[in-house]
Image (cartoon, rainbow, N blue to C red; front, side, top):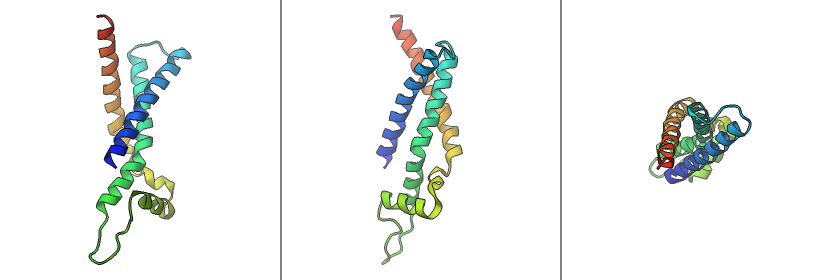
Length: 126
């Protein structure tokens, strides 16, 4: 499940960052610069948090499930855990802990993409 989460985060960050940055520049909301990079990267972090939070919740529940000796485990697997969670608590249960997730993911993504843009700028001049 960790690999699946990593794929989701990476794919959603990369795709959304480029798309959001391109939209900002096309609509001339901002010029290409630090402000645009920070805005697009924080939005990409938000998209990554929305995409990955359900996987985090399910992974945590599966890892923390208590299995009594001789009894069936509460979940048969990740999919069963997701189905039971949504049925018993509703779909928003998959977003428990979203505020801490975005609080961590947002700044990380800003640092990641602002650094990437600065490296691109340096390498372009060579």
